[in-house]
Length: 374
Image (cartoon, rainbow, N blue to C red; front, side):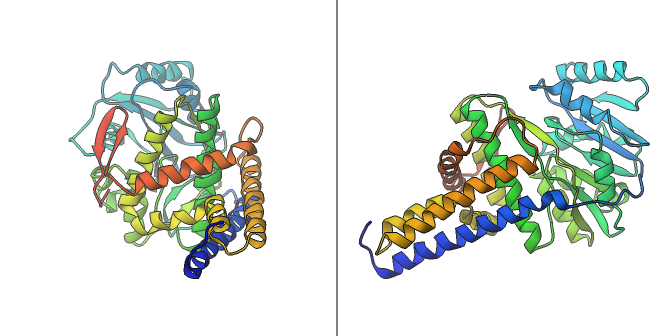
């Protein structure tokens, strides 16, 4: 306990309480996610565009999951810049093993764009035939009902774009476990809290689905190719055009394969700086997602120990509860790791602080600078 002016004590008490309430609400949002039901309605033709760039862990299993959908009238379009990209070999092998499926494999880019992923997709877009265009990152894996769940979110004619949460599974080791905890315990709950408070105005790379006519209306791929934050840009532009952005009930999964803390930290700082660039106020507000940090500071700077200690204990309990619920509802494989929760929060605080400064980050071997427009 450190003796400080009363105003400082009140400041940390306020944030400790606010952070506790936020986490408590996040637990509620995650726990009730499983109760969300969708009515199976229309099944418009869909084209799934998969941008590829080199081999990744479990790439074949991930790509194959998008070709095994229990959905009528869909196609899968795989694309890479270079025809010699080994990822295309994987895609061609999948296509050869599933001749009954509509699978297209193309290569080559188009006009140079800031975003290499969207530049890549310029060769795929002319081959897309679906009424709904779905762009999904190559590291995502889905279950057979994925496209049907995406289609359900388009039942409302006012919906122009659909996105989805995603979960993470660890490849093994404490570093990958920490990376998975960020996605499952912090990212997904924060989205659910945000959607309870305001309309969704952004998408996630796990699922960027848009009506073909809406995509043409907003300027096509060029509209999102000028920014690294293509997922955020798509949702924002669609919303500004007067359409709704909806959240599908599908939850794809990704594999966290980093083996070093430096690699994980570098990737998460890139995410943080990108979010800060496009949503500075929202990024600042994410500081309330650290109940243990403010609980400890409240204990250190409070005039007495009893009440702050009880609040810290309650914060730890609800934070562990969030971890357990997220693990269950998002169907994360393996056993929960509640003992990693304090370590994960300490790392998240470090990432958040690093995200406040600088404007560059590494993406697939490229050092890129993120401006205020993304």
